[in-house]
Length: 256
Ligand SMILES: CC(C)(COP(=O)(O)OP(=O)(O)OC[C@H]1O[C@@H](n2cnc3c(N)ncnc32)[C@H](O)[C@@H]1OP(=O)(O)O)[C@@H](O)C(=O)NCCC(=O)NCCS
Image (cartoon, rainbow, N blue to C red; front, side, top):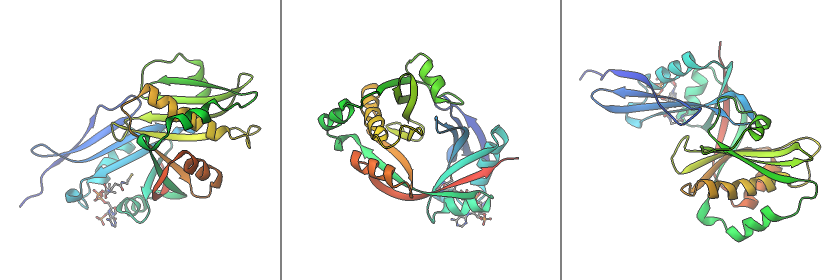
């Protein structure tokens, strides 16, 4: 039997996200790729997600999707977070990605969150600091100070920040629907030097979880990745009820 022909085509995606499909004749989707900005933390380095259906693997489809991504990417670097010892890791190594960090991926399910307890965490006094929020669509190159200065509106991104006298002290961001409709991905928290050791990371994370529920009540779970050597953030995730789902490795690919 001859191999079906495969077309790699761009498709529309959520705001800020570039997406492709590998379509096999007559009408089967063999694989998908997406490239989206990592909000606030590394705004100029997008993250790649690639998926090829099990029955279509090892026929070069993942590589063709990656070629389409590379042709469109304008940034000098891209990231991929892949499961340890998976086909994704073999694929990344084969394509010249460089392993940079080992991470833990966690999931928080809203039905496990005690809302009153979360409310107490959010309402706890942090003298000198105040919480602020921004919502909107994930912009192409999201810098947190610019987002906080711009007007909020409906969109797939929620940003929560702690400010001290108008200066940014800590923040965390959640983006809805990049990979699955009812799942959000949390980035951060990041706490700026000079503001550490005051539990601001836990505070902005708790406030983000609460705010996200208000803005996107249909979201049922939040995914987050944490460097495996970041004991403080791992403790924060555990405190907030995130459970470990898998170990991953972060890879980077330098683009010409
Ligand atoms: C990773 C993935 C996208 C690869 O898709 P694919 O279409 O099978 O990839 P290709 O056929 O283009 O593979 C290219 C090369 O990568 C390497 N590779 C891919 N899968 C591999 C595996 N399971 N074991 C060892 N090497 C592998 C091989 O060197 C392969 O070349 P070869 O088949 O000539 O030996 C697919 O396995 C997948 O969807 N996995 C789950 C999602 C995931 O892990 N994504 C990570 C990327 S962000």
